[in-house]
Figure 1: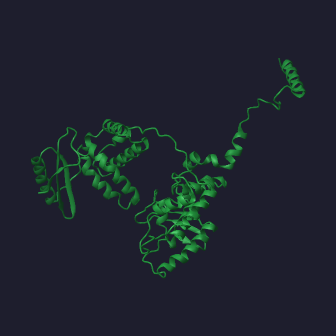
Figure 2: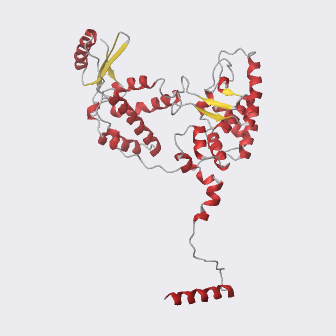
Figure 3: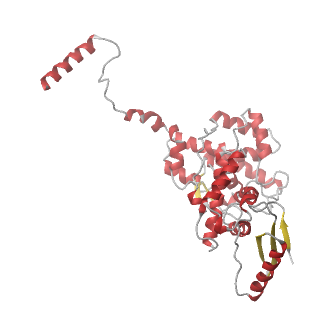
Length: 385
């Protein structure tokens, strides 16, 4: 009998928590929240009778039991990097909610959790992301019939300060490309930087683009959902292939083919620098070196390449809806809130809309022209009166 004690957390009374765990027909069955080993053994015996008879399917009753089904459900539906990021947040939640039954987790309990995280020094943004993850878990529970309401609905998100975007200038972007060429992965890293800066793709999206997604005849890049990266909104989109990016990609294609005589077991544009047969997933160390060679500050991370593309598109006076489609935004709201001030129309035209009519052609200072105009206005006013 697989009866074990939870060592990573205790229940709300500070007691040890026991659970059972067994498999049947390649399906895992486990339940936690028992105060004693004896309670867990009795519950396991009852569960096995139900499972072996095939009369019913066990339902998770505690938060800990819900976590595994939640992540199993997300596989293939959510980007792999999003899943790994959320998995890193779960241990903290398990310590607080793990042994609690789903039916008793309330908005007040979640507010307590938020308070504890705040006292621990976590930033409001981090806490809000954890609240969002909790909400997703309960939404899954409701969809599967494991819960009837989402207690996160009554929890208000914390206020966060708007961080100013770090947008590289054209000179800094050029310096970054030159810095990339000085690294051990020179041409590949430089091509990746140009690809990001001329397509506005997210980091994960760029590594899942294949040569078959690039149409050099129609000059289009297809950003499609792939296994391991289903995209943020799950929808394919198409980005025009800029002439400078096209030149860079064709140059890199020759190098790509020469590495293994064109016989790679994959079609990914960017492969592992040391193992060409593998897909690349990051250029973290190499990018930092390029950053140093270019003399750029640490906060100018690779995600700034996406900001560079959007900001340059806005300053080129491209329609916001078109930009939103290119970068995978569901609406223009983000662009309007964050990048609109860069638009030439915004900078040059918005102030002109302000028609106060206070000066009426007056020149600052007492002049003969102003005196004459004032006397004429007084005559008009007296006639009206």
